[in-house]
Amino acid sequence: MSFNLATMLRESANDAPDKPLALLGEMSFSYAQVDEVSGRVASALLALGLERGDKVAVQLPNLPQFLFTYFAILKAGLVMVPLNPLLRAPEVAYHLADSDAKLLITFESFADEAVKGAAQVEGVTTYVVNLPGNDVRPDGTKHFDELYFADDTRDIVPLDPGDTAVLLYTSGTTGTPKGAELTHDNLRSNAITTADTLFEFTPEDVVLGALPLFHAFGQTCAMNAAVYAGALLTMLPRFDAGKALEVIARDRVTVFEGVPTMFTAFLHHPGQAAADTSSLRVCCSGGAAIPVEVLRGFEQAFACTVLEGYGLSE
Image (cartoon, rainbow, N blue to C red; front, side, top):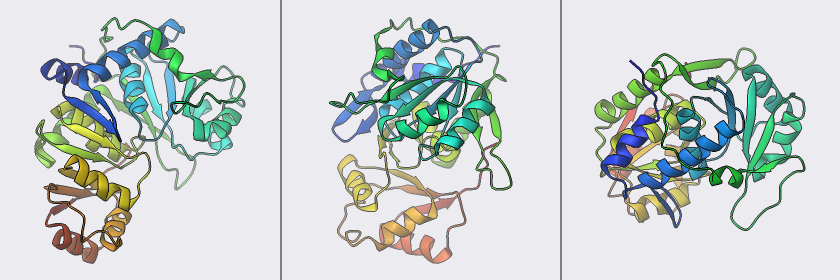
């Protein structure tokens, strides 16, 4: 029996093609659009000569392009290697070499360090995501937009459920970071458990995408769980408590997932009391133990249940 994690996107797109999947400010992308664009990028990646099992490193903040590349890589039968956008050149070089990545997709704000790191590893091609209106990029790199112009064949490469989908690097607190191999079936079961058991997601839910998607918490509990359930992910490229409160009110966010420092920032923000957060129904804290006073204070201030989770990159 074959399975590819990208079929979660396809199934949700088939169920509700016009339903928004991703929001970023005024930009909105439906399930059908994300499915099509990721299909175009998948075709473009294969046209570059990449083959099943090849690694593609992605160093992006929470932008729609993260979704496009994530599902494109999976559709093409490749392996996603998400990288922290704040890595310096030597760290980028280490991750690229250790993962044997053939391609690096980075963002304009981090491109200089990324290119310096990629230059230390033989055979890595770098694509840069630019914001609209900005075409500036380091010499020797390519525009990510070039990957949009291939045809969407709607193909999803059939894979073994035990094949690696994502190579997720640990924090390296006791040594150099290690690449944890997460399989297609592993990530599917995590998404299902999160959506059905932990949060009881429905297509009406709106998830605040404030956690970095390159991290296991944001990638599994926010992005993949939302896609599986047909929910909406409203994205924040960089967490700011004031901006997050605005997004919660504007988009009627129902689910917030964050680390304890985010909960603390909400509690101490001067606009917290006046913010309309009545849409929130459940929140989840992870990444570190949340202080009891913060948990209780948040539940009282926001009239919302806070769950606490524990997980590993592995």
